[in-house]
Image (cartoon, rainbow, N blue to C red; front, side, top):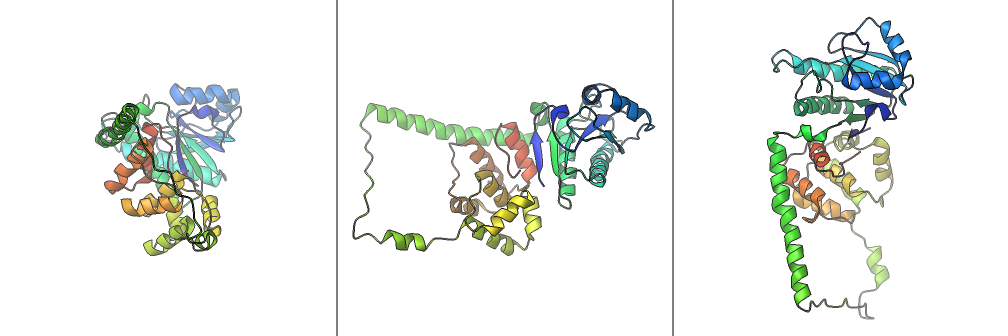
Length: 327
């Protein structure tokens, strides 16, 4: 199952388990920790009293009590001391151990906050990268729906050169396209704009029934061919595309399956297609890339720069309030 980036209150997410960025006592605190204890009720604190605390990088599980989740997985993140005190490895361990614990308890869905990114001082953009990279590695070998819950998305991209480059690319292409549109609109308002009528089919035209009988390769057929040509297995491809296994099965079993545009582009990214190949695959599904669409411009930027990290792409899409790829 895929990884989803969402902006929400983690205490309100309905899933099998939510992860608590706890302190070593497990007895509640501020931020996410305090919010989870408050929403869960006194039963959570009573159970936590019997756990004997938790070391940094480790994880322990309790019931969810009044929360909409069945479980709470408590993990203790590292305090940021400049990045020279094993903080990254300890933070990765928080995610790994929490995911292992979720799997051992048969959880099919789990929601994470950005561990250590609050009062513990871990830079948010770096904390986000550790979270996404560690979860993505886990999902390549396991089926689970994982949410990364971001409360303040603006801090993710502060000072990021990649984000600045994307913003500039959007300005250069998306805004320019809008200016051309309005320029043409104004020109038409000042003069008579003529559009030639579409000619109707005549008796001499090729018979319509014979045309529809000789259809081109469908999206599903092209996708399966490209997977074979890439040398990837089906599971490697749909996991790289951040696509659910059940959705991929529908596509494989139905040659005429009509996917959404984000689904098509997710596979283009997973297969590392060129811009021309991506446009061809989009066309098979009845879509196109346009500079009048901010979503399309961002995707084009990543493909042109041969950056096929779908989670980095989704981070950028999330920052620009666009639909995400895959999930």
